Length: 239
Image 1 (cartoon, helix red, strand yellow):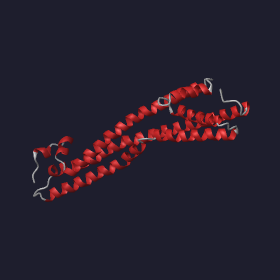
Image 2 (cartoon, one colour):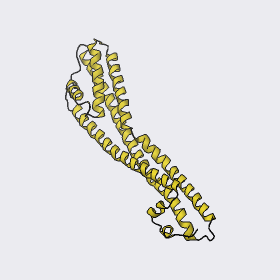
Image 3 (tube, one colour):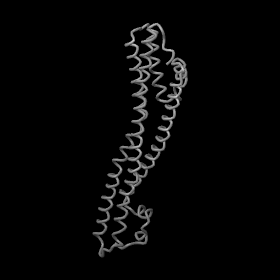
């Protein structure tokens, strides 16, 4: 086996074109995963930003003095376009009003019902906020190993070719080794953005969760004060 002009061309494209079929499959898979990972990262950036803006907007309105009934009416009409905090509030108020309509007057029962509804809504919102994080975590942990597999296979293929040569020089060895190492490089190229994205979004989701849990506690305190001050005969109309 003697070096060909193509083998002497050490550009990445040329190396991949003349790589073994397995290495080409591995590189193609990693590139597809990288594209999917970047797509998920871009979408998640927009989704997290939207959640933060909607939560901040509703929180300002909530503490502006608007009555709970008015906020609930607006939240009910804006269920699909609203943010997680608004939907959690609507779930609590909906359950609270249903219990009142059933003429349940015990303050503890009313408050527990509203809290359970808000906690269930909170879990749904967190499941949505955490979507695609598992994918990014998988990409970050698996991609280097997939690339390493391609490298090991490429090196094995290169040494098999070397064994059949009469004369071994650096020019004949280098292309095979280089094409194998490309798989590891692309594996890292896929993994690093996914790991960074996962860490960033996990931090953002944790902060969103803390903010929502704080809101649940604050809104529960408002309902508790309302029940204690107005009695079971009056509905919660303001805060």
